[in-house]
Length: 288
Image (cartoon, rainbow, N blue to C red; front, side, top):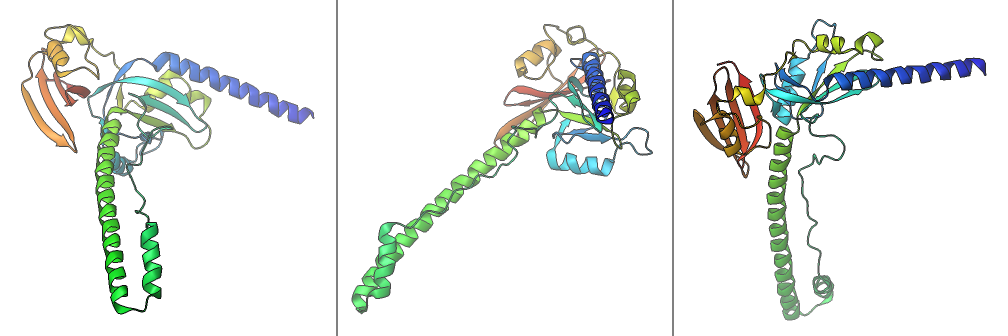
């Protein structure tokens, strides 16, 4: 009994310490903005980082995720730290929502419809054709049966076309949600996360090559006109009010969505802003 009780107490103490460490990390990081130094995929799979190894990031794997899910966060982009979560063998460093594909996110674009069923009349005609011996009667029955089969085939074709259109719309919606859903770093360890890794300094050191933790400049002071802080969800007019008239604007279509990219220059930085249907979904800030 005593060994069992001792192990139980040790487990409770370890769990309590981990919870306290997670709370400390959350209090330190969550709600702060950082600048990202690499492209990050639009998926909750994010970027795996193995601190202390010769190659902390598997860049071929990262390239595969970028190709599969698209880029949600670009190099040089400012983004909000939205959640820090401690797991058994890694620390989740979630940015801009943590990435699309978590529980509750619809990741399947496929829309399928069942084949049109045979009507009672069609089934009856199939039986009558098989039993009828009179050639003229059989021919009339078969003509009616062929007409019903053709009608059912046309209905199936219409349903497939509607399903394909619905699938394309869902694909575009999912692709857009991935672009807006942020991403994450997964700071990975061989087994359990070691206690020395559960400090803000250790987390920043693990991500130093990929995240700029220096203070971000304020959105109002940097804009030539002021009037608000640059953030996702603003309209084109609101962004123009903050940054002034764009130097250039380009347009493209993403499925059925209209996407525009505007380039702004302020006193000490260049801002590239991307809008979908007139709403800001991402922006990148670089030195001029």
